[in-house]
Length: 233
Image (cartoon, rainbow, N blue to C red):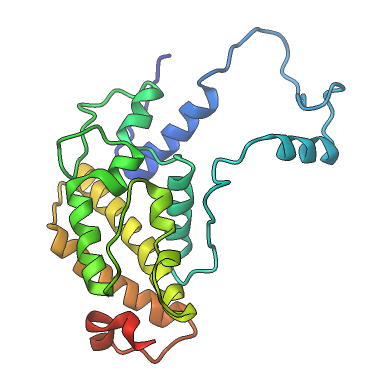
């Protein structure tokens, strides 16, 4: 396949769009003829709602074992990132290389030690592990055992907190994943690098701003958010 670009994809959004395009056409085989629409799920080639229901009932769900909560106080961009991470649809270096995208290397930008996969980026990288450890100390969580993204979404259920505290914690987890992804992109596309402690401080600030403006709970003060957080609710 030969690409003729007006300009090479450079931003995170452009690379993500390229990834989605490659995924859509990867197994396509052109056989000539006239283009026409055909619904493959039905023998007549015509679309029907009943055929869609049969497909959904028969297809295994990639997130069947993970409960994705959408009623969270973080922005939609954070929730979409978490959802894409659960089903392994983020343009990590490993996934891009599978689609034929030529990269300088396949190593994780945060640790430069292992291949950048979805699981490694959010749970296996030593940089990410330090971020999670600092969040664990900040929120006074019980020791976390994390092996993959599914474990991240199970953190709230494993903590002996109130319903309100779990609601707050779930948003913080989404905000942490967003911050990790942004740090990764900033290193690739902007050449900016931060230490784990700086990333966690940015998480505290952004999550507090989102929580104060997007949730119905307005009583938490900034000083409490930074020091006591879940002990206050």
